[in-house]
Length: 135
Image (tube, rainbow, N blue to C red):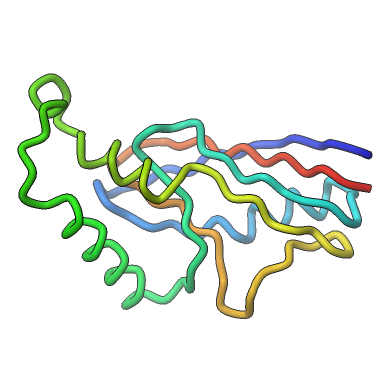
């Protein structure tokens, strides 16, 4: 069993933003030289998350609208010290990691399924850690 790790950075420009990182993750998986196994995609951040969804502009706006609506109307206590409680809560709800299968050196995913970094507290520079394990 082999394990290969790598990482890259993503710079966001908006407070709420979805950024497609699929190609960068796929490239790391292919270079890892692991034919069959799993890939962990992880964000070491508590105000960003990872989504598996279609990278279509209308759908991306829909996702952000729904997520913002989920956290609207609350008087968050955390905002008294750091005005980003909504970002922490959305990150926790969506999640900072995804595990996907790897077959023949490629990530297994649906036709319209991409890996999107969900920024909830931008603009920021985010680190994406990739860990590929298998044979």
